[in-house]
Image (tube, rainbow, N blue to C red; front, side):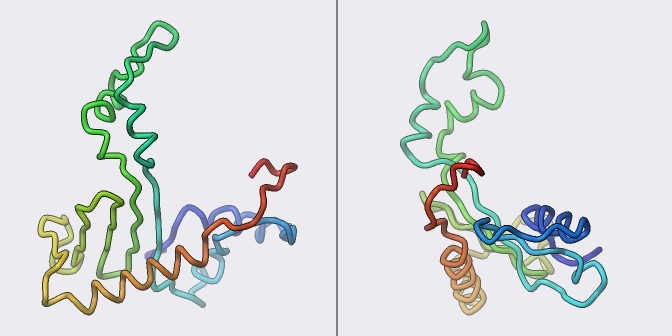
Length: 158
């Protein structure tokens, strides 16, 4: 499949393949990939977010030992020395463009057709102002659609 896909779509795809109906109380943001796989649909964009809030990044500076190993070794050392490398961020990607926005700044806009290796960040480039605005709006709409505003479901643990 050469269409844009995202991991969050795997559980709904598996459930549909297995013939398992959704529980109305489940909060699911992914969609089945079966219409994509059989060519009926082609997603216009995919999304991702991750990272940590500032108070969590501050913890990476602590000298912590666990089971005889320093917690700030390896990847944790990077987090300790460059905690902002794990700042909250969100991404939207279309077939041609990718936009990444970070809580701390350092946003990115890539034209993947002209720059597939992402070597020239086009954030703020007047020539892509309309593209940047459209992708930012897509990202805001995705956040509004996926924000978790429902109460915790104890039996599911989320």
